[in-house]
Length: 339
Image (cartoon, rainbow, N blue to C red; front, side, top):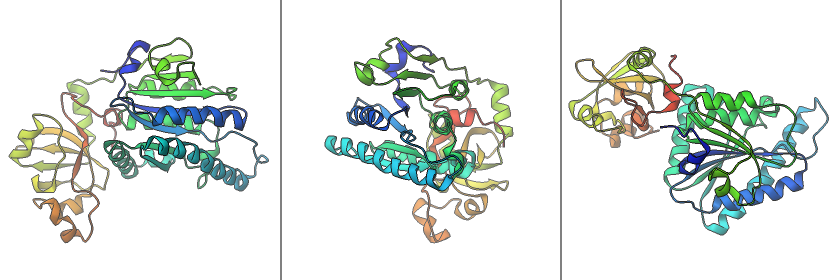
């Protein structure tokens, strides 16, 4: 059930934190150092994905994209060092990676993003996600990091998008981005940073900033039907796996796939059905229909022998499955019913 009030923010187990650096590079660096120390301090089972906006400091002349991209690369290095030093002192793993909006627009790339970040969270690492400004000029547009955060939070089934604004706020309203995330069922809190009591004070429901209450994500029989009709194909699973799905989400190994129906590529949405054609679940597929046609009924250890390579041990990962009753449902699937 989504968190729908400030008082429930402390319960958020997985959150995306966007740090927006205002005017003044040095002041922003001090605030960023504090955030790095707080993020490196373990807080129970809380999972954090960090997105630092690195646009502070002097700007190159307008229209000079190469210099702007070079400046972004330099700022990213300084930012990564700040977080790395804080995490090393706490002996906590930190993983830096770059993403662009195009990575979330593509089915296959979005699937890889989800699988990579979920894998990092499982081993206790904190992903440090940078907007990829150096290879795409779109990344230089004001507010692009906010759009990335607004799309990434629902794609990762986050329970909160926390936006921390340090220094003087930048011009321009990002209300549309925050409303977009809230409309996907993710509560959004935008507040000044640092706060006296740090992150814990903010998450404890302290006043200040703007809270965007999450919209309800509908889940009823008619919506489920629309979702399944949008699938690009189907995987027929054996009786054993069908029985396990009744108990909850579980990754689908190729050995449990009896038949592949339809033509689709990696990252496609597919229905998981039993031999009678009853739809048991919907998932995002790790392999194409052609690849799975060769892998069906084979054990994971045989994937490389059959294909000559192995990307995943599962046809569909457990994180990328949604059940008809919505249990453990993925917002990423719920909010993308179109093929």
